[in-house]
Length: 232
Image 1 (cartoon, one colour):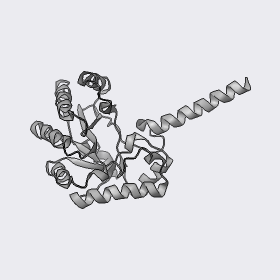
Image 2: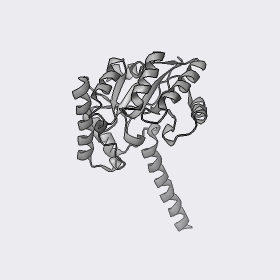
Image 3: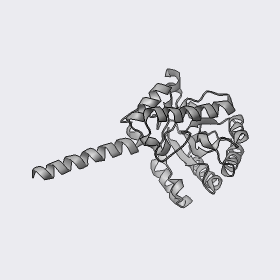
Image 4: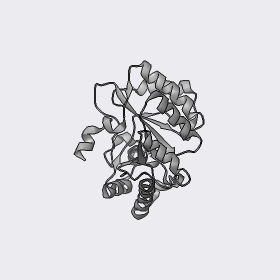
């Protein structure tokens, strides 16, 4: 009986730490802005893992034609060679954020010093091209832990999450993605997409059509989180 109780406790503790690290909305280690509490039918759209020289221009074209603002969380090691693309993102009125320099699968295991260096390097690369301060940060894979929380506090970032993860990197059908969005769509939502994925522009058209049909308006991320920005 004692062994069984011990096993249950160990499994429960492991489950808690897994949830705390891999559920960005849990906000166990740090406060992450994932959704705005509001009755106004507004949402923000974000893209991760760019800039991509093939797909990002296509995504920008859709956003431009539909007059939709977005926020692009960029990977630092993808900036070299795509400087003009990054400038285009800014020129067309979109926002950018830090998504780490390496986006390594080992990033959550980095030491505090290495993690800070990675984030600062990404920030410097972004600011060198855009000449704008970068305050927003999205953790690679949405994984958080005490080391990351410490780094974010030290560097003064505002962590941004989501409440609608489309799982578009798994390449489900657009219909499945729309169904997933429909289940989670509420006023103040933050939607996560990836501009590097094949046909990301075509998917975006369908997503925007659905959002409009549901009576929602897409706004810039900073409007969605205005009160927090004022406090910061």
